[in-house]
Length: 482
Image (cartoon, rainbow, N blue to C red; front, top):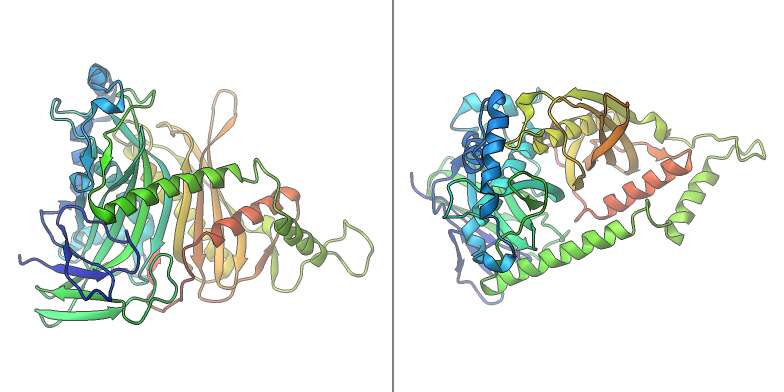
């Protein structure tokens, strides 16, 4: 099959990463730099990603054999580095991976990804991104001295997922690509992108599309266009960009383990690495300013007080008499809950519950919450700050609680909290917190908190909403659903 080449005139440094098969192209100096993405190697089929991960860590496909496989992994402890200096440095292109989801060329795959509205199930995309992120990190830490990796690499955080395009068709092929973009002592930041083909009637065609939304830019300059060179009748266009943070642990998944340092080659990669450092600092600052640790700012306190005053009954002189303004809903009435029994089928390669499964279930509940609240089928705009605080064991009872915590115009900010129950002492432990931004087809009601705790949820939702890269203009072809 002849190669398809996608040329992107980027608006910002680091939007696309020069990994394997990425070569810088010449261009008019007035414009930004241009990068070409070539299909330098055959992409991995999406169904083979999990198989490849099992091969890397020596995991068994048989649940009954998992204890034996974990015992064998203990023997790999001697291959772990005592310091990062012992490990050879790697380049960004060493970890570059492409994965193909051939929904167009293999129709039998579609049902797993299909919604009743003939749209893509975004929860399934989250599962694929999580698996790809782990595989990319194993490519970065690959050891030639042993067939199985002594590292246990797990997802620590979904930093950001931004949608670049509003139409995901279940009848066109999808390609994922990504690589390690920043490395600490024991953690790695992974940048991933998702592309989808769009068939055109004439091959050998050149198409220019005006970029309408890129991360951090609401109105790109007129000169910036997305240029696709079509060599076999299909174009791969970017539809999603994601940033995950992974951590490496020892072969028993009990303590942290060192990972290979990363070498940045050229100004583009240096900028990516620098951005990774900034992302780390931003996460630390955001955590330090958490409303669980610090009081709200003066502006935020004023916001809450004004909302409180707007709910006082003007007919009485009482702080207890509360009434809702027009087109408003109490936050306590925007909740949905669900329960999942964590069966072995949903386990990861380390015999804990797969993080992608947790994200999918949380997303689907969050979508249902936004749908029930807004009265129409909402569309995902952004996902950010998903913290994996504790692993979920196979056999656990997983409790999911979803709540609308902030609204503005057509936007709905949803927070999903997950916890597991200890069957002996009945105690519940938080495992994850998820944040999703949805957009409704019509303007949604305002949400008002009653209690101080709900007021903090409102401010936290407002903070996550304001961290969204750029506003999104709703179009009728936005087809991203659970």
